[in-house]
Amino acid sequence: MKSPTAPDNRNTTETETLSPDTAIRIDRVTVRYRLPHERIHTFKEYVIRMLRGQLRMIDHLALRDVSMEVRRGEVLGIVGRNGAGKSTLLKLAARVLQPTEGRIRIRGRVAPLLDVGGGFHPELTGHENIFLNGALLGLSRAEITRRLDSIVEFAELRDCIESPLRTYSSGMIARLGFAIATDVEPDILLIDEILAVGDEKFRAKCAGRIRRFRDAGTTIVLVSHDMHMVRELCGRAVWLNKGRVEGEGTADEIVTLYSRA
Picture 1 (cartoon, helix red, strand yellow):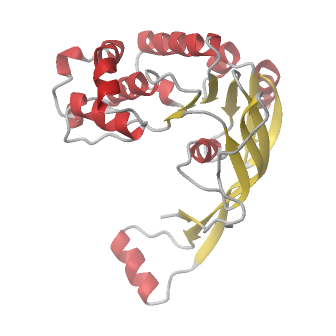
Picture 2: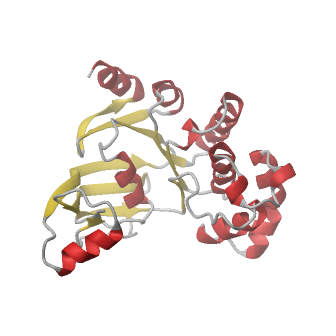
């Protein structure tokens, strides 16, 4: 179990005036989690240890003094091994987390696609989950209704859209999540490894939609272990290693450095 330590109230995630060419600015951001020192298998055990004063905690730094800027209209790739802090960085940009230290400034409407099944309810149908997820993205019921057919068509789920989500495969859920998140015409699109789920045909379809967003000037931040995709879609890339920025440059430069590490 882990939870971020309380953020410094003077250094909060906020939206404020940025230069016209900047979509996201991250200034010296640190995220610190408090973790139990020993492995705890159940929530009951966690509570008992806490009440008895037997809970020993240690600090884990998911991000360490990270600074970067994402320009409007660019596609930025984030690469790094598991545990490097990539997903934490996207959660900060999506305002799911606040930094323990530092500040994030964002311009524009953000559509996060951070987790397969994130924002979905397994007992609701695919149809009902479209309205639920769309509402979480800030769409009105009328807007979701207008977009409903195009979402279902892109996700290729028309035959099972009235079935409960618990009957869907992980690939089907990923298709639905991607279709909803990318139908809202965001200013900033955050994608965390979602394209790793699904068959080759659908991944190519998703990549095509990302390219259209890129060509239309949407800012995209893409986390991926697929170095070919990072090279193909991203102009710049950042390499995270153990919560720190290890390198920053063109996608080709960073993929080459990361692949040799």
